[in-house]
Image 1 (cartoon, rainbow, N blue to C red):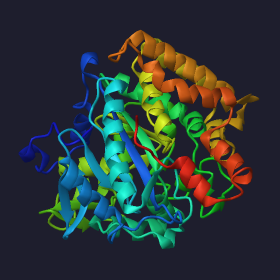
Image 2: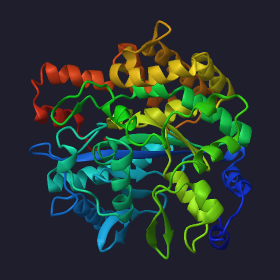
Image 3: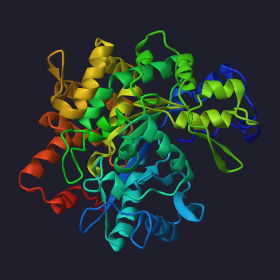
Length: 460
């Protein structure tokens, strides 16, 4: 889902002066119910098959070589920066790179999860085909399993050259987030301001639960790291100004104005002028809006870009983006968008999901958020395990999906994409817990066994 689509170029580059214009930019994303879609972003870590080390960006067996091969063989349009291929564009989707070479498919806006399934299957077939020829494996994990942050090559994008030093100043784990972690994110539309805030509130309330259900990063740097979602933990010491849960979201009177107020107070990274990045690290958007930067004045394009550099667990742009899940095995990758589509796009399910989490205090939410990172589905709140709540949530979501009634060519509704997640919930163990048990059990700490287990294979 592109946040730039609806703004004409001249309007996007016109200097802005008021907060009202920033609110209107977000509200312009509202859509009637019939036009609501789902967008999913899938990140994958890539390793050398023979030893599990992170694949480099450069070289004959690097991520750039993967992109070039995808472009040559499957019709993607390459995008270069300073002579290096750093992204691919398709008709309805894009492939981009995270700072450590994690490959991300930003999927098309789909009416249903069946559409997303077709797109993801084709993407994985292409990726696995190219990877096999280069001796690379793409893994359904939330973290690089072996390489340390210093052993992973930076993708040579100018934006990362600005972000990296700043993250080194404002937290201790920012470079680990950038280079080692991978996630799956799901994006959803809203009908108006009230609907947007309702969905933001419910999604934010579900954050600890989602973190636990999709925890999948218990192994990093060649050993158990003590967390079910190390990726989730890393975000807690990356940049406090722009990460975590947002307390104001739980105020029943909160509106888009409150989200804009939050965003105005977050320091910027950069703006883009004449195709070049201008470093504005440390300058809040509020100050930039009021006083500019040298001869530069804030524009709607700058605001749209700034919104993409905020990293709360649930992010609001011209749609709602839920960001709390580790990247998953292929059979689980669509469980997140399916679960949330069942919840967020069905009024009764939305209310039912809120009932699961509405009574917690802010202190309980924060404590549970951190407990979920370490304990996964075993974490407790008020004597109830997250596994128990996860069972209720999947039941609510399945009911919502059945009522929505989106069928594939074989007559299956979207609940089919919850099957593996329901197994996880019934077992009471997140994917990360299963990894940890295999690692310390029959795998005997053998990284090759982990790679064989986690590697993507071409869908049937």
